[in-house]
Length: 280
Image (cartoon, rainbow, N blue to C red; front, side):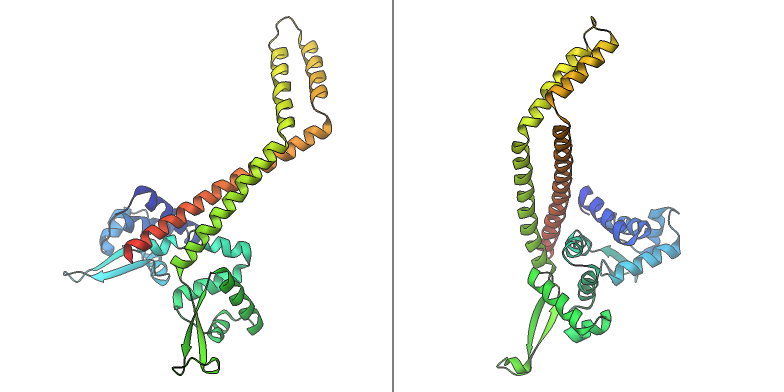
């Protein structure tokens, strides 16, 4: 059993990657491990038995569900939350920096473990040049790692080959640092933009205050109010000022939204590291 927010995060990640059916089945197992009949009963006819079986196969293929045989010879299913949380944002960073082919390599190494470059090339059906370029780029960014295997004890270059593999804890630690730096840059950028446009925002606040006073003046008719508010608006902000203010507002909104997404990613990464430390 884990925290409610941990379960919710895992459920959202599974739905995003594999669909609602897999997400519902995994949620049922996360709440309490058990054999298939118990899982079916817990879902209360919301999901068909065939769909539950397919969902468990998907989870097993991606190493997100474990099973063991109990003393009554029943198969007991448990969810590997650490594996689910590995979905959190790492793939998005790879897509952001490279392309979906890198995701395919990343997931392939997650499932297969250690692979040589030519094995990856054959399994992904990419050219030798493209495979090598993508692997080197991912290696440089810390998304994949290499393990040297020497045919002799001296590890001479001519008699050494390298196996590529994924080390999620190490990758996530790097992504935490990268995300923190990115958030720092966004906060600094937002603060800088606010200082640069302070005179415009202050003029807008003053203008809106005057316009509210005019609008609430019962001694003026509607036509006079409209005329005076138009004059105030033109006095305080030109068309160029309004256009600049609009761009500033949109940029601020985008930065705040990006900060929020980064906070979610950081939360997911820290949850993953917490789970990884508990099982190590």
